[in-house]
Image (tube, rainbow, N blue to C red; front, side, top):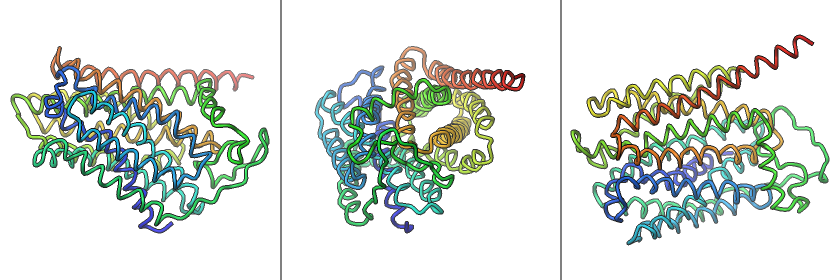
Length: 419
């Protein structure tokens, strides 16, 4: 795949994911304009996350059944429609409806990654996926900076107008500029297919999907079976608490920064995305660490750093420099743990990576929604100290899940050795 096609797919991911997170630096003016009580403004972000959760369960499996390129274009257009509804909303409920619609179809990110893997040659697949998923990081963190700058000049509604315009432009470009996806013939249901090592991590449909052999409902229902696997459940729970901690920071930070003693503007608040972006991009070697077999210990170290980052973040009322350092450390830790989890899961399920990652991302969405909704409630009652304790508590829970799994793995290994 050519460089410019990779960049196009990265931009698709960035615009789609920005539709969920763009509200974070503008929660205060957005909530005030729509009449949302301060303690409930977290639901502005959480609504998009709940929609995203529904899309992961209901829409991502379609990528194993239909033409992904057309799905990407259609989902982009519907995401743009949700952002138009949000930008034009005069009431809170109308805005929530638009945010939910945009969130549902923002799962175009997962479809885009699967498409990128399927049209790439085996020798360049890893590099392609790396470039495409980098768009997600830029969309989450860079979107905040864009939102802050636009909101200060033209108001919060301009953020959604710009994102909607970008999505509407990208939809036809995807159809016009990207190559058609060659569907691989699928063996009869129940047949086993060998997957070469080079294909590990590729979105390959499970046996029976693709020629109409497995209905859509069965594909969706199969996600529930993953919960019986310890690796999937452990990594899902770690991700749930990981992104609850992540959302506690990014969905709550704008409120104290906009108030005393800092009184920062939306653009200034958005600049903290630079610290987060630097931290996330600083974790670029996480994939190599996982490739070398160190995904499990590296995850533990990342989660310890995540908990420690809240010591600096908690200093927000007194020091913006310590806050920036904490933000850098938090985003570094989140990216390392997230990449490590995806590496382990796709290595364990090379023949159904798309479905596994879709199910895994359900935990991400639930955790993000919890953190976004809880942080503003806690902040209204206990200030930023309460929100910081909440974020650190979520990090501690993730670390506890990791430690329990390590102990169980050690015991299992010991029993096998004793036989």
